[in-house]
Length: 356
Image (cartoon, rainbow, N blue to C red; front, side, top):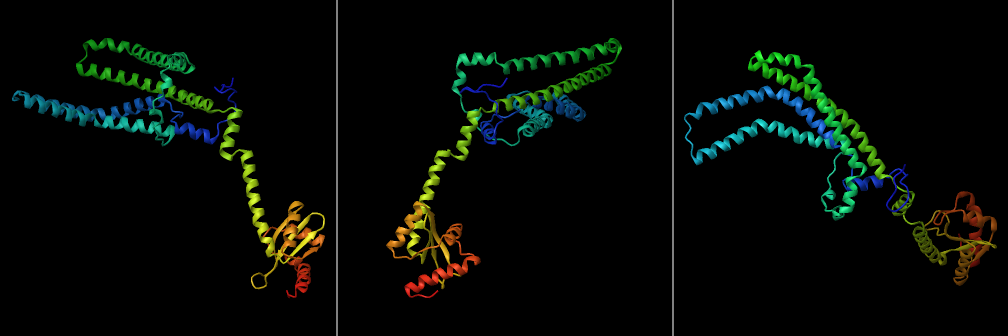
Protein backbone atom coordinates (compact mmCIF):
# COMPACT_ATOMS: atom_id res chain seq x y z
CA UNK A 1 0.00 0.00 0.00
CA UNK A 2 1.36 3.43 -0.95
CA UNK A 3 2.47 5.71 1.89
CA UNK A 4 0.27 8.69 2.64
CA UNK A 5 1.54 12.27 2.73
CA UNK A 6 0.96 14.37 5.87
CA UNK A 7 -0.80 16.89 3.62
CA UNK A 8 -3.10 14.20 2.23
CA UNK A 9 -2.95 11.93 -0.77
CA UNK A 10 -0.97 8.80 -1.44
CA UNK A 11 2.66 8.96 -2.51
CA UNK A 12 2.41 7.06 -5.77
CA UNK A 13 4.58 9.18 -8.11
CA UNK A 14 8.28 8.52 -8.70
CA UNK A 15 10.53 11.19 -7.15
CA UNK A 16 11.79 13.90 -9.48
CA UNK A 17 15.45 14.84 -9.80
CA UNK A 18 14.74 18.06 -7.87
CA UNK A 19 13.19 16.13 -4.99
CA UNK A 20 16.17 13.75 -4.92
CA UNK A 21 18.51 16.75 -4.80
CA UNK A 22 16.48 18.38 -2.00
CA UNK A 23 16.68 15.19 0.08
CA UNK A 24 20.42 14.96 -0.58
CA UNK A 25 20.99 18.57 0.51
CA UNK A 26 19.25 17.73 3.80
CA UNK A 27 21.55 14.72 4.29
CA UNK A 28 18.70 12.26 3.78
CA UNK A 29 20.40 9.60 1.68
CA UNK A 30 20.26 5.82 1.38
CA UNK A 31 23.19 4.84 3.57
CA UNK A 32 23.41 1.49 5.33
CA UNK A 33 25.33 1.35 8.59
CA UNK A 34 25.55 -2.41 8.19
CA UNK A 35 27.70 -1.93 5.08
CA UNK A 36 30.14 0.17 7.10
CA UNK A 37 30.20 -2.39 9.90
CA UNK A 38 30.77 -5.33 7.55
CA UNK A 39 33.48 -3.50 5.59
CA UNK A 40 35.24 -2.35 8.75
CA UNK A 41 35.12 -5.77 10.43
CA UNK A 42 36.18 -7.74 7.33
CA UNK A 43 39.05 -5.53 6.19
CA UNK A 44 40.35 -5.08 9.73
CA UNK A 45 40.37 -8.85 10.19
CA UNK A 46 42.33 -9.35 6.97
CA UNK A 47 44.73 -6.54 7.86
CA UNK A 48 45.22 -7.85 11.38
CA UNK A 49 46.06 -11.34 10.11
CA UNK A 50 48.83 -9.87 7.93
CA UNK A 51 49.93 -7.23 10.45
CA UNK A 52 49.91 -9.51 13.49
CA UNK A 53 53.43 -11.02 12.94
CA UNK A 54 55.00 -7.56 12.68
CA UNK A 55 52.93 -6.27 15.58
CA UNK A 56 53.90 -9.23 17.77
CA UNK A 57 57.59 -8.89 16.84
CA UNK A 58 57.66 -5.19 17.70
CA UNK A 59 55.69 -5.75 20.89
CA UNK A 60 58.09 -8.47 22.08
CA UNK A 61 61.09 -6.27 21.28
CA UNK A 62 59.56 -3.38 23.19
CA UNK A 63 58.63 -5.46 26.24
CA UNK A 64 62.09 -7.06 26.26
CA UNK A 65 63.88 -3.71 26.23
CA UNK A 66 61.52 -2.44 28.93
CA UNK A 67 62.22 -5.50 31.08
CA UNK A 68 65.99 -5.14 30.64
CA UNK A 69 66.05 -1.58 31.95
CA UNK A 70 63.50 -2.13 34.72
CA UNK A 71 66.19 -3.17 37.24
CA UNK A 72 68.17 0.01 36.68
CA UNK A 73 65.17 2.32 36.54
CA UNK A 74 64.80 4.92 39.31
CA UNK A 75 61.18 5.86 39.89
CA UNK A 76 60.55 9.56 40.31
CA UNK A 77 57.72 11.84 39.30
CA UNK A 78 59.69 13.01 36.26
CA UNK A 79 60.78 9.54 35.22
CA UNK A 80 57.24 8.19 35.67
CA UNK A 81 55.91 10.95 33.42
CA UNK A 82 58.59 10.27 30.79
CA UNK A 83 57.89 6.53 30.98
CA UNK A 84 54.13 7.04 30.54
CA UNK A 85 54.78 9.36 27.58
CA UNK A 86 57.14 6.79 26.05
CA UNK A 87 54.59 3.98 26.49
CA UNK A 88 51.83 6.08 24.86
CA UNK A 89 54.06 6.98 21.92
CA UNK A 90 55.15 3.38 21.40
CA UNK A 91 51.58 2.05 21.64
CA UNK A 92 50.43 4.80 19.27
CA UNK A 93 53.04 3.81 16.67
CA UNK A 94 52.04 0.14 16.93
CA UNK A 95 48.30 0.85 16.66
CA UNK A 96 48.51 3.78 14.21
CA UNK A 97 48.09 1.58 11.09
CA UNK A 98 44.87 0.15 12.55
CA UNK A 99 43.46 3.58 13.44
CA UNK A 100 44.39 4.94 10.01
CA UNK A 101 42.73 1.98 8.30
CA UNK A 102 39.56 2.51 10.33
CA UNK A 103 39.35 6.12 9.07
CA UNK A 104 39.95 5.08 5.46
CA UNK A 105 37.37 2.29 5.59
CA UNK A 106 34.80 4.56 7.25
CA UNK A 107 35.26 7.20 4.55
CA UNK A 108 35.16 4.91 1.52
CA UNK A 109 32.30 2.75 2.80
CA UNK A 110 30.19 5.93 2.91
CA UNK A 111 31.62 7.37 -0.32
CA UNK A 112 30.78 4.26 -2.37
CA UNK A 113 27.20 4.36 -1.11
CA UNK A 114 26.30 8.05 -1.42
CA UNK A 115 29.23 9.72 -3.20
CA UNK A 116 30.72 13.03 -2.07
CA UNK A 117 28.33 14.83 0.27
CA UNK A 118 29.09 17.64 2.71
CA UNK A 119 26.11 19.17 4.49
CA UNK A 120 25.46 20.64 7.91
CA UNK A 121 21.68 20.14 7.77
CA UNK A 122 21.66 17.00 9.99
CA UNK A 123 23.54 19.01 12.67
CA UNK A 124 20.83 21.69 12.88
CA UNK A 125 18.73 21.10 16.04
CA UNK A 126 15.22 19.84 15.37
CA UNK A 127 13.16 20.67 18.46
CA UNK A 128 10.17 18.75 17.08
CA UNK A 129 12.06 15.57 17.95
CA UNK A 130 11.82 16.55 21.63
CA UNK A 131 8.07 15.99 21.52
CA UNK A 132 7.49 12.97 23.83
CA UNK A 133 4.37 11.89 21.95
CA UNK A 134 6.04 11.76 18.54
CA UNK A 135 9.13 10.22 20.15
CA UNK A 136 6.99 7.48 21.64
CA UNK A 137 5.50 6.91 18.19
CA UNK A 138 8.97 6.55 16.66
CA UNK A 139 9.84 4.01 19.34
CA UNK A 140 7.14 1.70 17.98
CA UNK A 141 7.60 2.66 14.32
CA UNK A 142 8.35 0.32 11.41
CA UNK A 143 11.95 1.53 11.37
CA UNK A 144 12.43 0.62 15.04
CA UNK A 145 10.95 -2.81 14.40
CA UNK A 146 13.34 -3.39 11.49
CA UNK A 147 16.32 -2.36 13.65
CA UNK A 148 15.25 -4.79 16.38
CA UNK A 149 14.91 -7.59 13.85
CA UNK A 150 18.36 -6.81 12.41
CA UNK A 151 19.96 -6.78 15.87
CA UNK A 152 18.31 -10.07 16.87
CA UNK A 153 19.31 -11.65 13.56
CA UNK A 154 22.94 -10.63 14.04
CA UNK A 155 23.03 -11.92 17.62
CA UNK A 156 21.45 -15.25 16.64
CA UNK A 157 23.65 -15.82 13.58
CA UNK A 158 26.88 -14.76 15.29
CA UNK A 159 26.05 -16.90 18.32
CA UNK A 160 25.26 -19.85 16.06
CA UNK A 161 28.55 -19.39 14.16
CA UNK A 162 30.58 -19.32 17.38
CA UNK A 163 28.71 -22.25 18.95
CA UNK A 164 28.87 -24.48 15.87
CA UNK A 165 32.58 -23.77 15.37
CA UNK A 166 33.50 -24.54 18.99
CA UNK A 167 31.30 -27.66 18.98
CA UNK A 168 32.90 -28.94 15.78
CA UNK A 169 36.39 -28.57 17.29
CA UNK A 170 35.54 -29.62 20.85
CA UNK A 171 37.26 -32.99 20.56
CA UNK A 172 40.55 -31.33 19.73
CA UNK A 173 40.20 -28.99 22.72
CA UNK A 174 40.14 -31.97 25.10
CA UNK A 175 43.75 -32.86 24.32
CA UNK A 176 45.00 -29.33 25.06
CA UNK A 177 45.45 -30.21 28.74
CA UNK A 178 48.61 -32.09 27.74
CA UNK A 179 49.75 -29.61 25.11
CA UNK A 180 52.31 -26.84 25.47
CA UNK A 181 51.36 -23.22 25.97
CA UNK A 182 52.43 -22.39 22.42
CA UNK A 183 50.26 -25.15 20.94
CA UNK A 184 47.30 -24.05 23.06
CA UNK A 185 47.64 -20.43 21.94
CA UNK A 186 47.97 -21.53 18.32
CA UNK A 187 44.80 -23.62 18.60
CA UNK A 188 42.85 -20.79 20.22
CA UNK A 189 44.06 -18.36 17.55
CA UNK A 190 42.97 -20.71 14.77
CA UNK A 191 39.50 -21.20 16.28
CA UNK A 192 39.12 -17.46 16.89
CA UNK A 193 40.13 -16.69 13.28
CA UNK A 194 37.63 -19.26 11.99
CA UNK A 195 34.83 -17.77 14.11
CA UNK A 196 35.69 -14.25 13.01
CA UNK A 197 35.74 -15.31 9.34
CA UNK A 198 32.23 -16.76 9.71
CA UNK A 199 31.10 -13.61 11.50
CA UNK A 200 32.45 -11.52 8.60
CA UNK A 201 30.51 -13.63 6.10
CA UNK A 202 27.33 -13.18 8.17
CA UNK A 203 27.85 -9.42 8.43
CA UNK A 204 28.44 -9.13 4.67
CA UNK A 205 25.21 -11.05 3.99
CA UNK A 206 23.24 -8.85 6.40
CA UNK A 207 24.84 -5.71 4.93
CA UNK A 208 23.80 -6.72 1.41
CA UNK A 209 20.17 -7.20 2.46
CA UNK A 210 20.18 -4.01 4.53
CA UNK A 211 21.66 -2.01 1.65
CA UNK A 212 18.83 -3.13 -0.65
CA UNK A 213 16.23 -2.40 2.04
CA UNK A 214 17.61 1.07 2.83
CA UNK A 215 17.59 2.06 -0.85
CA UNK A 216 14.02 0.77 -1.25
CA UNK A 217 12.95 2.59 1.93
CA UNK A 218 14.47 5.89 0.73
CA UNK A 219 12.77 5.53 -2.67
CA UNK A 220 9.43 5.06 -0.90
CA UNK A 221 10.13 8.05 1.34
CA UNK A 222 10.97 10.29 -1.62
CA UNK A 223 7.85 9.38 -3.60
CA UNK A 224 5.48 12.25 -4.28
CA UNK A 225 1.74 12.80 -4.36
CA UNK A 226 0.12 14.03 -7.56
CA UNK A 227 -0.41 17.42 -5.92
CA UNK A 228 3.29 17.69 -5.01
CA UNK A 229 4.22 16.91 -8.61
CA UNK A 230 1.94 19.72 -9.83
CA UNK A 231 3.32 22.20 -7.28
CA UNK A 232 6.91 21.33 -8.15
CA UNK A 233 6.16 21.76 -11.84
CA UNK A 234 4.72 25.19 -11.11
CA UNK A 235 7.83 26.15 -9.13
CA UNK A 236 10.26 24.93 -11.77
CA UNK A 237 8.37 25.88 -14.92
CA UNK A 238 6.36 28.78 -13.52
CA UNK A 239 2.65 29.21 -12.87
CA UNK A 240 0.79 28.93 -16.24
CA UNK A 241 -1.32 31.99 -15.36
CA UNK A 242 1.75 34.07 -14.55
CA UNK A 243 3.50 32.84 -17.69
CA UNK A 244 0.45 33.83 -19.73
CA UNK A 245 0.50 37.31 -18.17
CA UNK A 246 4.21 37.69 -18.89
CA UNK A 247 3.65 36.53 -22.46
CA UNK A 248 0.83 39.03 -22.87
CA UNK A 249 3.02 41.87 -21.55
CA UNK A 250 5.85 40.86 -23.89
CA UNK A 251 3.47 40.75 -26.83
CA UNK A 252 2.10 44.18 -25.93
CA UNK A 253 5.60 45.65 -25.71
CA UNK A 254 6.53 44.06 -29.07
CA UNK A 255 3.30 45.45 -30.57
CA UNK A 256 4.12 48.96 -29.35
CA UNK A 257 7.63 48.74 -30.80
CA UNK A 258 6.15 47.52 -34.07
CA UNK A 259 3.61 50.36 -34.17
CA UNK A 260 6.42 52.84 -33.59
CA UNK A 261 8.00 51.61 -36.84
CA UNK A 262 4.87 52.19 -38.96
CA UNK A 263 5.54 55.93 -39.61
CA UNK A 264 8.80 54.92 -41.34
CA UNK A 265 6.97 52.69 -43.86
CA UNK A 266 6.84 53.53 -47.56
CA UNK A 267 3.57 51.71 -48.19
CA UNK A 268 0.86 49.73 -46.41
CA UNK A 269 -0.36 46.70 -48.38
CA UNK A 270 -3.79 45.58 -47.23
CA UNK A 271 -6.44 42.99 -47.60
CA UNK A 272 -9.52 45.19 -47.24
CA UNK A 273 -11.13 42.74 -44.84
CA UNK A 274 -8.58 42.16 -42.09
CA UNK A 275 -4.84 42.30 -43.03
CA UNK A 276 -2.31 45.15 -43.12
CA UNK A 277 1.46 44.93 -43.82
CA UNK A 278 3.87 47.87 -43.60
CA UNK A 279 6.80 47.75 -46.05
CA UNK A 280 9.89 49.94 -46.03
CA UNK A 281 12.68 50.21 -48.59
CA UNK A 282 15.88 52.26 -48.63
CA UNK A 283 18.09 51.55 -51.61
CA UNK A 284 21.14 52.92 -49.78
CA UNK A 285 20.78 50.65 -46.74
CA UNK A 286 18.79 47.62 -47.94
CA UNK A 287 19.20 44.98 -50.62
CA UNK A 288 15.45 44.35 -50.66
CA UNK A 289 12.26 45.80 -49.14
CA UNK A 290 11.59 44.77 -45.50
CA UNK A 291 8.37 44.06 -43.60
CA UNK A 292 8.46 46.38 -40.55
CA UNK A 293 4.92 45.83 -39.22
CA UNK A 294 1.97 43.59 -39.80
CA UNK A 295 -1.28 42.63 -38.18
CA UNK A 296 -4.79 41.31 -38.55
CA UNK A 297 -8.19 42.67 -37.56
CA UNK A 298 -7.77 45.27 -34.77
CA UNK A 299 -4.01 45.58 -35.27
CA UNK A 300 -4.54 45.96 -39.02
CA UNK A 301 -6.95 48.82 -38.38
CA UNK A 302 -4.46 50.54 -36.03
CA UNK A 303 -1.72 50.27 -38.70
CA UNK A 304 -4.03 51.94 -41.22
CA UNK A 305 -4.92 54.71 -38.76
CA UNK A 306 -1.24 55.49 -38.15
CA UNK A 307 -0.61 55.36 -41.90
CA UNK A 308 -3.37 57.91 -42.55
CA UNK A 309 -2.02 60.16 -39.79
CA UNK A 310 1.41 60.16 -41.45
CA UNK A 311 0.06 60.23 -45.01
CA UNK A 312 1.53 56.85 -45.93
CA UNK A 313 -0.05 55.33 -49.05
CA UNK A 314 -2.37 52.37 -48.49
CA UNK A 315 -2.55 49.90 -51.38
CA UNK A 316 -5.21 47.21 -51.50
CA UNK A 317 -3.78 43.96 -52.90
CA UNK A 318 -5.23 40.92 -51.10
CA UNK A 319 -2.97 38.20 -52.65
CA UNK A 320 0.22 40.17 -51.96
CA UNK A 321 -1.01 41.18 -48.48
CA UNK A 322 -1.55 37.53 -47.56
CA UNK A 323 1.91 36.56 -48.83
CA UNK A 324 3.61 39.43 -47.03
CA UNK A 325 1.70 38.69 -43.81
CA UNK A 326 3.31 35.22 -43.74
CA UNK A 327 6.76 36.84 -43.44
CA UNK A 328 8.35 37.68 -40.06
CA UNK A 329 8.79 41.27 -38.96
CA UNK A 330 12.22 42.46 -40.09
CA UNK A 331 12.39 39.83 -42.84
CA UNK A 332 13.36 40.88 -46.36
CA UNK A 333 10.99 40.31 -49.28
CA UNK A 334 11.84 36.98 -51.02
CA UNK A 335 12.82 36.93 -54.66
CA UNK A 336 9.49 35.60 -55.91
CA UNK A 337 7.81 38.76 -54.56
CA UNK A 338 10.43 41.22 -55.81
CA UNK A 339 8.59 42.11 -59.00
CA UNK A 340 5.12 42.66 -57.58
CA UNK A 341 6.41 44.63 -54.55
CA UNK A 342 8.67 46.68 -56.82
CA UNK A 343 5.63 47.57 -58.93
CA UNK A 344 3.73 48.65 -55.81
CA UNK A 345 6.66 50.75 -54.62
CA UNK A 346 7.11 52.25 -58.11
CA UNK A 347 3.45 53.28 -58.09
CA UNK A 348 3.80 54.80 -54.60
CA UNK A 349 7.01 56.65 -55.50
CA UNK A 350 5.42 57.98 -58.67
CA UNK A 351 2.70 59.49 -56.52
CA UNK A 352 5.36 61.10 -54.30
CA UNK A 353 7.62 62.04 -57.19
CA UNK A 354 10.36 59.59 -56.06
CA UNK A 355 12.11 56.74 -57.88
CA UNK A 356 12.74 53.18 -56.69
